[in-house]
Image (tube, rainbow, N blue to C red; front, side, top):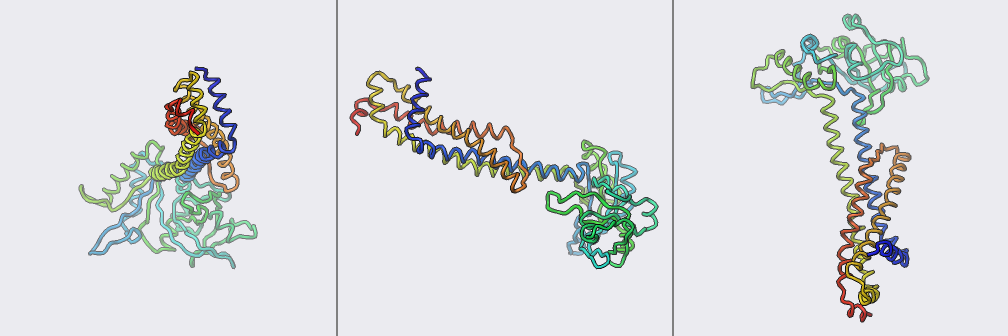
Length: 406
């Protein structure tokens, strides 16, 4: 069998019906382009989520009170007062896997400077909090341990606070921001971090010594949560185990009793969101893959039409000594050419579409070479699968019946 001649014959057959061949390929083109673009969007979203959450600190661990039922009433986490400063001190002294730890208390309210005001959240933390959350100081300084001890009315502000309370470009350092009835002197401005993966503005915050927020703003003695940083990402699990053991001892929880707190790590959240993103990527790819299936059905339909139109030609070739395998190969090659050429065009269209999505919609897009190879292999297999039955039908025609066909 001369495969070169067979391919030439197949190409000539497709050229005779250029527009029909293009319409047949269109399903494959759209299918391949859709698969590549959808997988690129899914992978881009996954990478964006991981990057944004990693910017919050991949080693970050946080502990918060758990809900509890007392006297037939289910208490929320915000109602629980189980966490104390002694818990923070115990974690700092007895957890070798922890490199930094900070108590956290918070309150929402209006921040006011002159005639400008902005609804925001003030967080009471210690000087280690910036390192735990990966915040950097753009100007000014962090508050000191001495300022924490004396309940100093000082604060650091995020870029969103600067933009809304100091809209004329004045320097915030040294100026006073009033939160509720408490004036806080601005001693530092944080560098911008933008929104996180959940759409929360990470620059819309005020940081103050936790003692100041505890006593002057909230008038409480307990803390609302504990933020810590493991010495390395590999030590996250060890740090969580150590914190759990210490908090159970501090809270006098006996063996077999349920914890009155909950500990989570940033790496767990990254894995959770990555898993959700993977499911969404597979779903997007599956939806786009339906168009590949439709394209394959289109190839089968056109190949049936082609067999019917060329029945006399097939009969003539068989009558002069052509073999059924030659006829089968010819029609199979035509089907494969339709899918392969459509796949190649679809790849370029998919790459172009991904670039357009990234440029005009500002969506994160990551084109994976594996997705390109996968789409191309699938479209080739579709050509073989959906072209086989019409090709086999052509090869099985009786030469006499074929020559008599009108």
